[in-house]
Length: 187
Image (cartoon, rainbow, N blue to C red; front, side, top):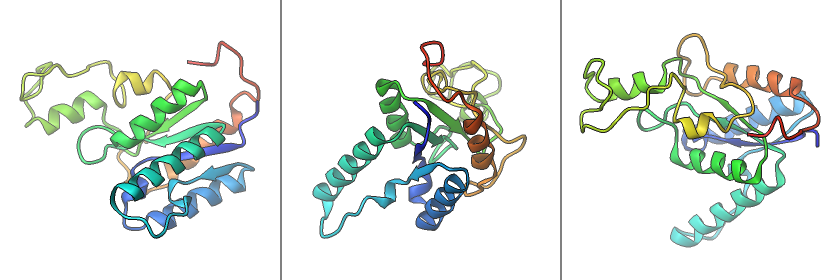
């Protein structure tokens, strides 16, 4: 099945200019003949608290079931790792056996970011609490990275969180991705 519709996941929905970022990403997708589904496009009004939370969750699940693939922004958010909601969405796509495409606006490896966040405890394989740090030379947790259909797109040096250049490069790679999937391409 050719990839036409992408679920646009990431912490972008929390940024002050979230709606604008979503429209920019959708326009970039459209310019390449793709449709981008941005989570903020779920029309929700008149709800609050848990009712609102549940409606957003259900709307995002509907978007993900409809999409052919996910393009997830795994730029670290509120810590050294990716946004936990985005991690859930990547896992959801893995369970659906749909292609997963990842990008980050950070050049540093996950283990280096964790070490830096843990008061730079040297080359210890453990953080300041004594917990083991994954040291596989990956952009984030191995369960996320290994689910990806292509290697993670990362810049040679850090980019601003809201920068779209890395996203654009990954879109170009997705266009070159095989038009039909077979068992050897699935994670």
